[in-house]
Image (cartoon, rainbow, N blue to C red; front, top):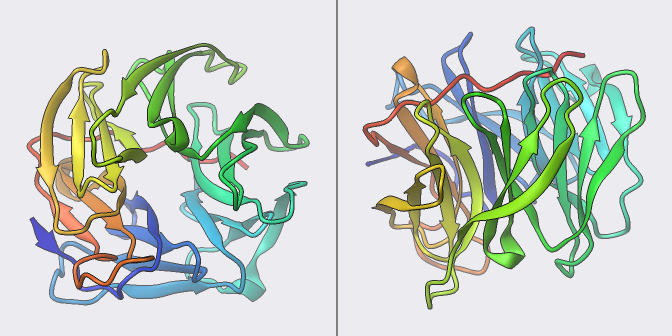
Amino acid sequence: MKKVQAPRCELGEGPLWRSESKEFFFIDITRGRLYAWCPATPHKAARLVFQCREPLGAALLATNGDLVLFAGHRVLLCPYGGGSADCTLLWQLPLAPGERFNDAICGPCGRIFAGTKTETNEDGALWLLTPGQAPKRVLCGLSISNGMGFSPDNKVFYHTDSGLRTIFRYQYDPNTAAITAAQPVVRLTSPDGAVPDGMTVDAAGNLWAACWGGGCVQQFSPAGKPLRTFALPAVQTSSVAFGGTGLSDLLVTSAATGLIGTQDGGIFLLSPGASGRAEFRARL
């Protein structure tokens, strides 16, 4: 395990690998910041890529490598290397006061799933964003909509509701993006109260979940069987993403909010002995 040279994040989240520039991206949600870090030059600190005045709930990539940013209640397209003045509005969602984006993912056909949470951790939602169409709410009444992923055959969609400490699996139609037949696949029950947060799926179909409050990343089989646990020095581990050479590195974010530990809010790089898959990109 290596600690990345990066500012201490109040709410680090949303790691993402951009192959063109060979960089990991990650966000500090509450500070509205997007950072980039290159594992090929580990001695160099992460650089600030984008700053906004609103919470920055997620960042994705478009097919051409530009950035899709989830700022406040808006979804913006920002050219790679651009600033706020270069952004164009893609969608504006009717979020309630105190509700914000919390995670997002692109699907196989270039559509976007974007999850939200509220200040009371009630009435979160999952939205489907299709280019040229109005946003569509596909799940409601969630506590904290969180990490998502797809099985290697694109027939299963995984979605985390952190308030329920559960990752659900859905049947997924890659043609329509419809999700049906929800079933719990991972449910954390540890006495420390850890909850599954951000997640990803590796090339073998195994699930990797950051465990907020548990100070670790856990690997699960597609059936939800615990396989391995990687302990980290940050209690509030928040999300994970594969990247680097052969997609064999795992970047882990964490959050310092409410904590005073010097490692809390750090960004970490693991060599977990597994490889990821290239994430899908938005077709806009």
